[in-house]
Length: 128
Image (cartoon, rainbow, N blue to C red; front, top):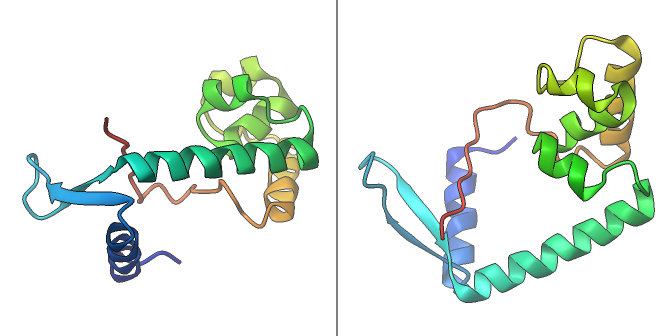
């Protein structure tokens, strides 16, 4: 489980490493906006490539870049692969199809839950 305190400590470590900086959120003074520095962006690019490479090795063409871009979430892209893109695009969700729900759960289980942020309470926004 990700807690507010745990997230704050993680951001402290990332900031002290020089990969991000905090600034006050102009829309809500109770929070901060986290911006990646140039070194943070390079690290993100490197990590993204490593994850993409690993997904390709483990899942082949199941999670294509096009599917991930279209559905913006690993679990929804997996559902699109299993149930068909048109069916998933209608709701942008994992449809209530037992086979598809089971497939998504199995694959996310194999991935150790990576990409499953279905709780919906964590908002991440990258800013330029």
